[in-house]
Image (tube, rainbow, N blue to C red; front, side, top):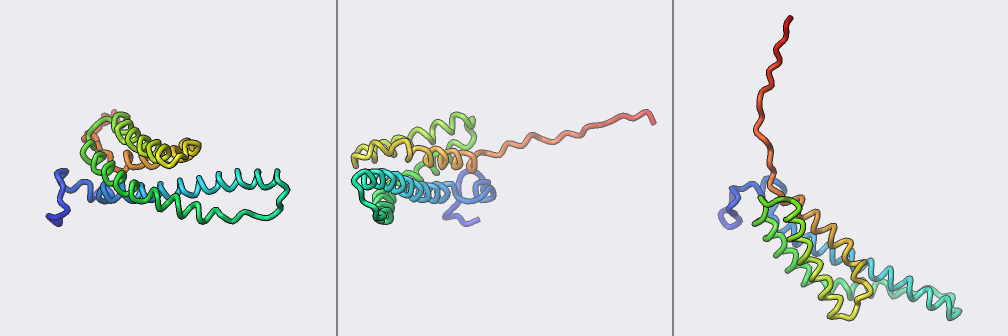
Length: 160
């Protein structure tokens, strides 16, 4: 095992599927992309309804620019939040799963609410919270300490 990437868990995090910080970053970036697509779809539907009411029959093609803008805004917070939550998940790997879930979900949702408030996009908090909850739950599950009970031999006495 490389000493630069060594952790205090005895290498079990590497065997169980990789570095928790890298997993957190990957999930954070994927979460930001899914949120950007969700916001673009909602914005497109709102604009399409407005244009339909106004009598326009042309398609609104601004969805890609919305995805790019929202992703660029959310990329840096997603990387840092994902790294922090990955590190936290690794440190808390022996805690009870429900407690780990709460500890990982609450900061992730606070970042979502904070960014939505900062950019005056409060109407998208619920849409952004769904993939965030899924990413935090996946991070909790993938970094959980595997507790396997010790095997015991069952002896079956037969009268044959």
